[in-house]
Image (cartoon, rainbow over all chains, first blue to last red; front, side, top):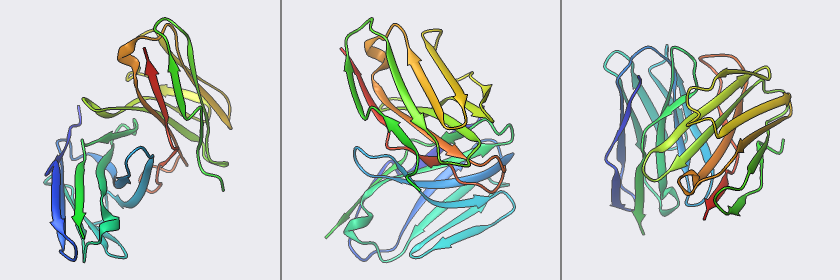
Length: 112
Length: 115
């Protein structure tokens, strides 16, 4: 059974810093990996999707990498802003295409 | 596009009552997913449909839970009878069945409280 782990569980940094969120998964037979953002009391917003054949994806200040063989992904946020404060979730779509398996998330606070 | 629509947004009910959650996927999407989010367990897949057909319901916690998709634009998740441990946020998501490329789009969720 696929398991997804996110480290750290919580992170608080001053505004302007670059930061890295980590995600690991136990079964490397995945179709894709998605990073989501969830604001308190809200739904999930997809940030980036990396196909299993890709190594990274970029959107604005966000860059996500994927190392499928080692079961790892990172989300890099450049020049963090208070508006980036949210919970960031990593999810993988497994080889059985049976829906996404989520990590527990990283709760990020950017201090003004 | 209005995105994935869920109703109600909030539901408070008493133990033993029937609860029905509703979802309208994005037009043109042919895959629909129901997830549940709790503090203890995080986000978990309950069931998903492809072209209105249930593909995998192994995540449904027990027989009290049932889901239907009578057509491409509507799905329901029913809990009967409801129990306090069912309290959670229930999300519906949809995507196009194009494995490896397509994003799942999530609705705003239904926050269920069972007293």
